[in-house]
Length: 127
Image (cartoon, rainbow, N blue to C red; front, side, top):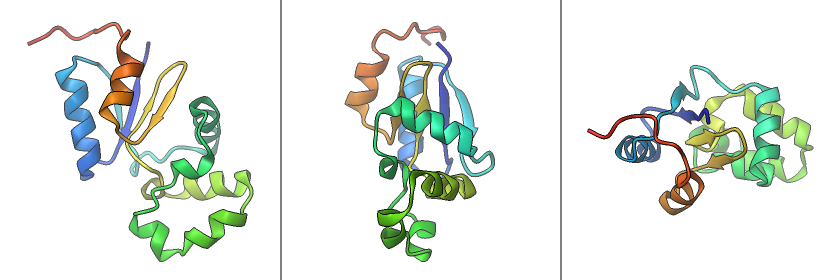
């Protein structure tokens, strides 16, 4: 199973998730969500695979969300418009995101991540 870990290095939650992944010997491919912003195609696939409403992918506490007054815009915009917005700025996207072959996790919840990854074959040797 290939795991893609999208994160913003200065985000405390992302650092906590990265530490948890290391401590649990879970190997991931790390990607800076702002430097390598997800495309509309990637976001569409991940949103569908996550089973979550698209609004769960918005970083509602972030500066970009607040500065652009997106609280009102997201209520009436179509999914296509929302995906286009998300693809414009990695800072708009809730993080971290963990993308696997058969699931996507948004935000870090240690219990949820542990349950989803319990059968993950550890590829890094314990130290």
